Image (cartoon, rainbow, N blue to C red):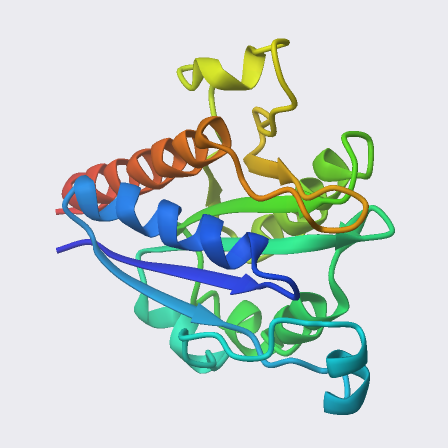
Length: 202
């Protein structure tokens, strides 16, 4: 069975919600899915004052375990148009995996959230893609088979590079049904792609 890791960083719960939806999509395509998060690097007192969502069900991931999966889907909120420092710090520790090519040929994918429609969703996705490509991973985005990302009737997330959501400047907007349909679809595609690559390798 194809093994998929959904690896995320979620300060306010938006990415956590999307991670669950992506996992559901991957499971619907027959994958064995694990959801984990990276460690919080912000001091607890600062995180509490900023109203971070401190309690989350997903266990903390280790860098070493990344090599155990056929596909890794990385999700994070944006920070000045790039991935969060928490996720960057985690991936920066993967030099040993990179050096021995442990992730070469595995499937990589990405999803993100921003506070505003023009708050850096695509650049954040690209910052993740850059890391995954350095690891030798095969990138899967969110194609226009997810038609919802083309809607102009409401605020929607989504890009050809990965699923996204707009959280609102105050974080009050939760991922919409269209956004979650995108994450579900991306999870499906990742699982099917990883399974097909596994079958091709014999």
